[in-house]
Length: 233
Image (cartoon, rainbow, N blue to C red):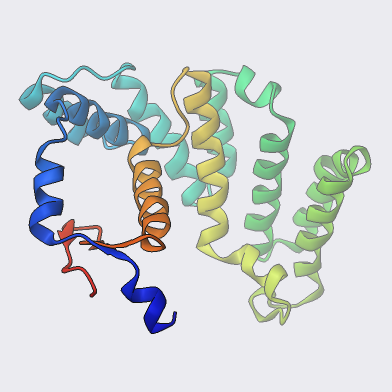
């Protein structure tokens, strides 16, 4: 950015900015609902119960269902995919019946866990019987299956030199599958699959980036503490 362009920007002092912020009225009830939404969606049941007691904010779903949902999520994160499938079917069998992509990803995760455990023959049999027929019906599924089966080309799958194949063994892959299943359960309960708070923070970052082009103002760079920085002049 050139010097002339920078000097043409409007400069808003910290005092002016804080005065404008103080004029924005946000109801405490709305803030409390935002917090409760985050706690419920992310599965912090004990924190949600405590917050409900302290603030009087009512969750929009039965808090008892959070414990069941978190048990499903934890099972996937621990590699216990069969247990997770049983648990989600106990919750609502329609979740997997109506979501073939999610069911395929769970079966793919089962295959990954068999490979991780070194159960080569069992993994091959499972891939042929459970996943191959689905791959024949869906090209995207077939590509995922081929990527997963490629792990079997190595005596020790963790030594696979191909990053996009080896990363299937990362905990991030378990987390990805667990998050997809968690979102599906939330949707089945008529609840948003993602918490609102992170979306609002993304909106804040976007708005600041837009404003950067027009003015110099007290930016919030530290989102954790929401500290207003002095404007750059």
